[in-house]
Amino acid sequence: MSERTSKAEQILDAAEKMARIGGYHGFSFREIAKDVGIKAASVHYHFPGKQDLGAAIAKRYTERFLESLGAPDDPGAAPTELLQRYIAAYRRSLVEDKLMCLCGMFGAEITHLPDKVARETQIFFERNRDWLMTVIMRAGKKKKADAEKAAFSILATLEGAMILARTLDDPAAFDAVAQTLALE
Amino acid sequence: MSERTSKAEQILDAAEKMARIGGYHGFSFREIAKDVGIKAASVHYHFPGKQDLGAAIAKRYTERFLESLGAPDDPGAAPTELLQRYIAAYRRSLVEDKLMCLCGMFGAEITHLPDKVARETQIFFERNRDWLMTVIMRAGKKKKADAEKAAFSILATLEGAMILARTLDDPAAFDAVAQTLALE
DNA sequence: CAAGAGTTATCTAACGATAGGTAGATTATT
DNA sequence: AATAATCTACCTATCGTTAGATAACTCTTG
Image (cartoon, rainbow over all chains, first blue to last red; front, side):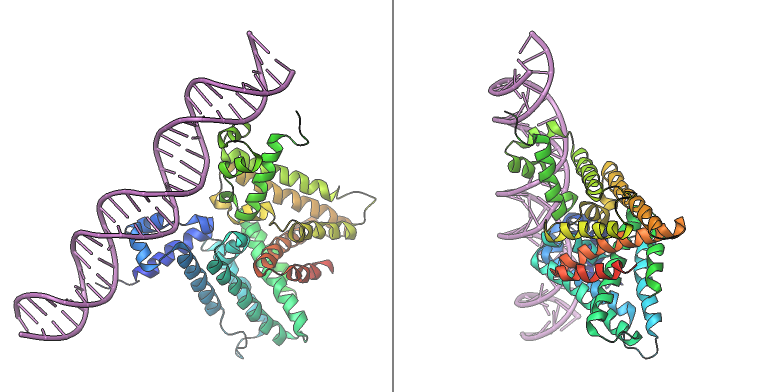
């Protein structure tokens, strides 16, 4: 009886959602188990330890996020359009999912995370930086160092905007911040 | 025998430090107790519940933070100087204390926090917004609505820059982001 | 086809650690 | 004597994790 999604995927789904609300301590094997209809011990069959599960959701999150953006050097998409798409990805997470960015969450508590999880979190930021740098250099910035600064700035600003908008419970605050980015 | 700092203050110090590493779940009565040299039950004498302690550190953090900035309408300080001072406050937390902004941390996990704590976290952002708006309006001729957008943008960018720099373990990333702010 | 072996997935049941919190005795200070 | 501060001792809940039994499914083989 093969269901539409595997148990491992269901576990990842539940863990990711919980982590995007409460961070690394926001998900537990028991709560996940209840969510997907098995016992806590069975979750360990799919993911040996919490570190592994934490690293797995961060890795999947990163891959899905970048996949949803498309290639930064796609000739069919203008750099400005790609940047708008990038901003829209954060907005969707905030407004539709009503969830924090997983790696923004993990990033805040980075010094409190197991190595495996911290590493995956770093990778999210590095790959986002690289994606943005490619787009920015296509858009006109010539020096690589300047492109990196601009990429860091966009990345940081959007992560911060999510926190701000969620704290004030005001999606308009996100848009206000995003608006100051779009002009560049 | 009255020491230099009261026990309540020592408790706040310990709790704040732990929370700025691990968030709301990053501090516990037992760990705090060990830190200040009393038993866990005694911590409850000073702060009845965890909510109260969490709210107290957020409140004190906000007050100290704004105090360190000085008045936004101080005639003796130019708006650009005040903005530099604002950026420097974040930088100090990152580089010297090597700690995350407490309310940036709490903001990330806002939907997971008790009401009392969430409220204090909101107040941090509101009061920072107001401080920045005052400075920004002094600096230019901007409309109030535009000043709010600019204030949100600075606030979000610096919170995000802290997360970014801490995750990549690279203070230069913070400076790169801050540099894009200073030009405004 | 039928039986058994192997593999995959889940279960029960518990362990030790840690959490927030409470009651009531005890000590220290005023 | 009264108040302020801390203590011991415990409670209940949850955590990650583990060992070992038990199903459930797949594959091979007589």
